[in-house]
Length: 156
Image 1: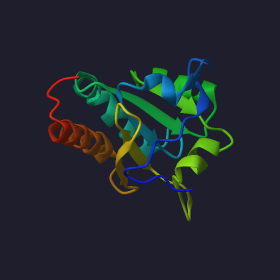
Image 2: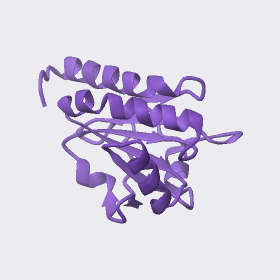
Image 3: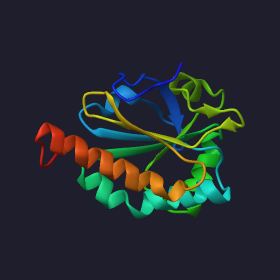
């Protein structure tokens, strides 16, 4: 299965870096930036996470929640989050079920894909780039602002 723009975002339950179970549906009413990345503490993934960290206040002001997903364990995520002071949720997808549900794979394995989901649960933007991980937060912000403009919303 591959999730595309206009699709309803598939709900899932998963364990966070804090060992808590969350579901995607609990964030309804907010924009959700769901970003899949290959592995904690690798150069590209670290650059991507730091970019989301550095834009986090701006994303929050737009009413967005950031959720990073990889197949690393919750304890790996916890260390990665602490090491780089990441202010957002990291989710463990050890079996790859969430990644599979969203179609966030490439021929070479896990891809770097970001899904921007509207407050109503619809996918409004999909961005995939292995080459420039630091662009993912910028793409997400642009998609949220365009969605708000289309719907006439000025603030969330």
